[in-house]
Image (tube, rainbow, N blue to C red; front, side):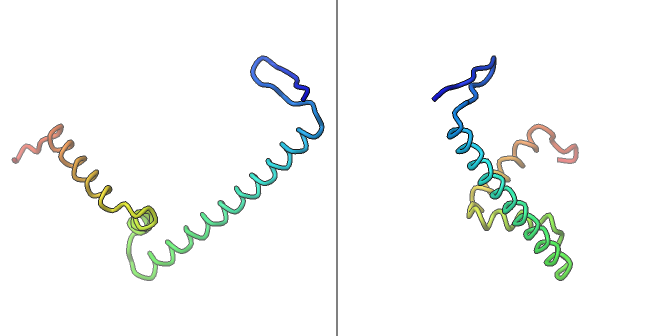
Length: 95
C-alpha cells in the first residue's frame, strides 16, 4: 500500500484504500443521520409527555436515561455523596 506522508498523518494513495475509506465514511454518515432522527424522536416524545402530564421535560429526560442505563442505585448513591460533599463545603448558617 502506498502512502503519502504529511507532517501529521499518513494518507493512502492506493485507489482501493481510498474507495474503502469513502465507503466507511458513507456508512458512518448514514449512522449519524439515524442518530439525529432518533434524537428528534426522543425530544418529541419527551415534549408530548411533558405537555400531557405537566411534568417538566428535564425530569422526564433524566428518568428516561436512568431507566435506559438501569443504574438508579448508582445515581442515588452519587447524589447522596454529592449532597454530603456540598453540605461539608458550604454548611448552612442555620445549622
